[in-house]
Length: 253
Image (cartoon, rainbow, N blue to C red):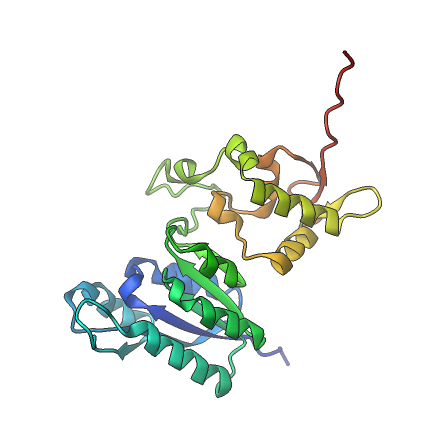
């Protein structure tokens, strides 16, 4: 008998999320488990949410009506928090998908993770860092593009990946990223300094919310290579390994 797939509860803050990305979000979550609970929260009387209506039916997402009790301020986030906690203690899903760019969900994410549930976040690049870091993994929707064969670019949007991709120089200037990668490689390395990239990914996952696509690279292997800080071995294979390049020797004066 096949083991049961992990159950994922997808909760969408429709007031702060683009409807056009929902198919890609569901596809992304399918790699973690089965999204058998799907809910989108908002005041569905608003004309701004019209773009969601057809997609709700297409993707079997349950619309959760939440009226605005105060003019100019929506109450959807509070309704999402209440439902998330109710689901946590009743249905007990293995993971939650939270679609929002609102930092107000940070305490909720921290609580869900403290109770053993993984949290996969999706939001805009402007999403505050505390919310991003609280998630098990956070993916910026700006970078979430349909697969386009073996290439990195979407043919419908030529040059998009290139514009979003950070250059080696930009990657090296990101001190937090460099430290994270180096520490992960060192933590997974054998006596010769080599580490399997899969093991490096696990090390990173234990430390921070991280996805190489947020830097414009489809895989961790490509990101590591792009930094030009590491040596690579067995590229193109599942056993690809990485080792930090030795520091350049200083000449004598």
